[in-house]
Length: 375
Image 1 (cartoon, rainbow, N blue to C red):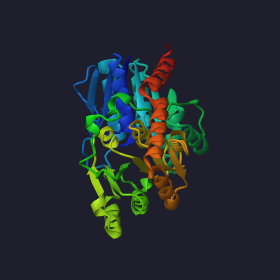
Image 2: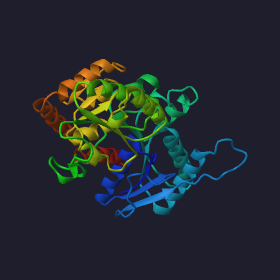
Image 3: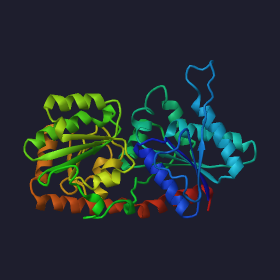
Image 4: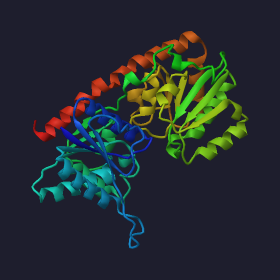
């Protein structure tokens, strides 16, 4: 197959999943074309069967905001015709599914039929999509997709609750490539540079948006480090970074917190870790939690959205209500209190992560592709 993948090329979960999916398809000898405004952060252009097409938006003084949807739909038409693509897979309803629909209609006038699959990832439904300014367009885009998938049962239920959906929705979980995670006792997992032998290493990875509640990460860590020697690794960056920095100063724990910024080596960073904190207000799935579990790291998270489908309470970690910092800190201390308990949670987390491997999930996407193509 020749497949066009439309995505946001950022460090967020949707961009990561879309990129990894495309690379996996390319390894199976499908021709994959990534179409977006910037090279995706995890995309290696030296990979066989992989192409990248940048969407340019021309500056025009008439527009206060430049029309990305128009530029994208035009680009999609050009790429589909030039490379004779069979299928488009768009990640996020707006603007991607909307642009794919417009491209589909323009191509139909040229005698080219191009189906498109829409994968919903979360904020396009629960935050942006449900806003009155966008709701009609999102609903239209979903119902005019040739197939629709969501990354969790929770997001599927939210979609059906918030919109009048006439399409069947397939739930296909996010996934990880376990081959990219160092094994236990691997030399790459030497942690001496980050912590003393008696210290536990706590990790958090996000884009530091308000919905991630990174200040709660600091509050949880502040409570647990009073009981257990520990260091905190923060991976990512975003609008809440300065607030987090100020809170570390207020608690006088700056010397115990390491900011690493954005990184393409999250898998290696997580293998250092003993515990992962994810106190988000909402998560459609929780890819960061799954990546941590694949690296044998148990999870302290909220019970929001799709997180209970990933983090099994009392087995791979613990779930708490949003904002319940005290309970999350106590649960963290319970996991970290002794090596036997910690290792049991680590083993459980790693075992459960195997449900979400690339080998398990990729055939499910291929089945959807075959269905819309009538194969």
